[in-house]
Length: 198
Ligand SMILES: Cc1cc2nc3c(=O)[nH]c(=O)nc-3n(C[C@H](O)[C@H](O)[C@H](O)COP(=O)(O)O)c2cc1C
Image 1 (cartoon, rainbow, N blue to C red):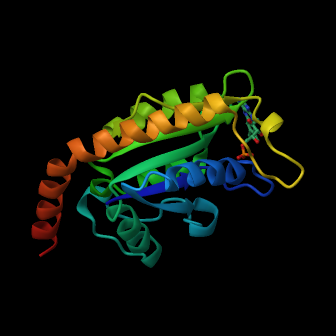
Image 2: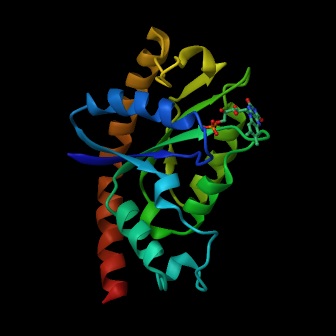
């Protein structure tokens, strides 16, 4: 079974991202090849990057970094649930990405974005170039939700329509293909990480 982490990219009070993350979490859980966990950056509460060394060295001084490293190290694949802020993605998501380097490598990442008419697609395009610097593989299939508030009820529950569900399932299938294809590279990478740490 592959370990999938769904990362909620928004942290602000009153955010809608959690409702959307819960929706994709429920769909992802039906894909039994994955053991899926929701990761809430608001709970993780990382400060602005405060490590003195480049993350490639993995010489972490702070417990919050060691915990974050261990959580991301334990993953085989990701879904980033991303808002669009001023045509980009959120600062907390960028900060969380920048904390680490090798922990992200050779892992596929799929995107669920939401916004107005552009459905958060500009944010996703911006994340894609960043994740490739980390040797992650961005999955083409994505759920991009325009005018997302239409799908959130008074109890803050998001319910996607049939088209969104179908796309989400195709995205999961593709994520699995990449998680499998990149497995040898991840195994090799972990051996190196362990040797360097020894
Ligand atoms: C700082 C800020 C900038 C925003 N910029 C955009 C934008 O560029 N495009 C867009 O579609 N929506 C934009 N919005 C509206 C968001 O889509 C909407 O507020 C959404 O709820 C944000 O996600 P969140 O609730 O998970 O934080 C912006 C919202 C905020 C707070």
